[in-house]
Length: 278
Image 1 (cartoon, rainbow, N blue to C red):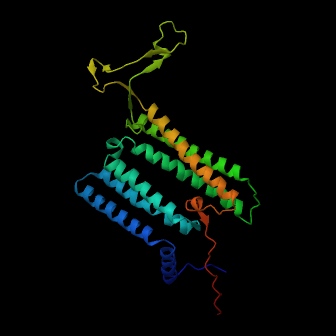
Image 2: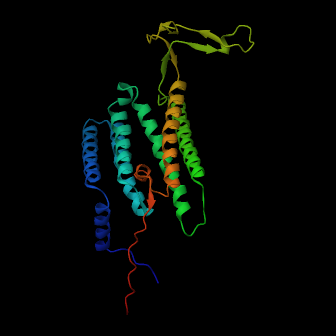
Image 3: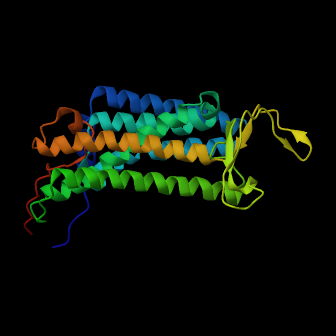
């Protein structure tokens, strides 16, 4: 029997059910963020700043992803996780890119990478936990395996993102991997004997390029410090959640803290409609 598409009334009822499944705070936050980004989009179009307008459009699309995942994949996202995801998108795209928070606040990028390490570990953990609880698939994975797998998933995503930043900087001459001013370097390239000895230069206060001082007060590192710091804080975020996930499974899913961040399968399925008699 051919399955009919849901009617307009059924879609309306599904939308109402989705709204009821979210707390008032999540709905208010979603509406407020969309209004702010929408206003920024209109302003940037008026100012003919189309690159910023594109970032606004991208943010609006990303805002819809949690609801899309819940409906299409039949997965329930905890309200706390959804709030963090929405705030993360707003902080990264609107505040970070459009308002230049990455430059104004040096630790803004660090905070976001720590959060992303935590979130991606939650996603990786959820994928394994859902398989572990699926009655049609026979898995009985230990808590430590799930925690390690979630950690590895998060770190892999972090590394892939750094690959993306490096590739974008090389191909399009941007500066996604922010540079760092340092006052000490050690390099075997400075060893005149070519015997693989790292020669140190300390107390660097200025660097001259093509006869012109950069005026930075030190040596300019090209992205390495930023990349390693991003991976370190991703490591911290992934580790924190992996520990929470371990105890979540260890205590049979009774961890209140971890439960607020772990997506689960939505077991509530709409009742099947009886076939119409001809």
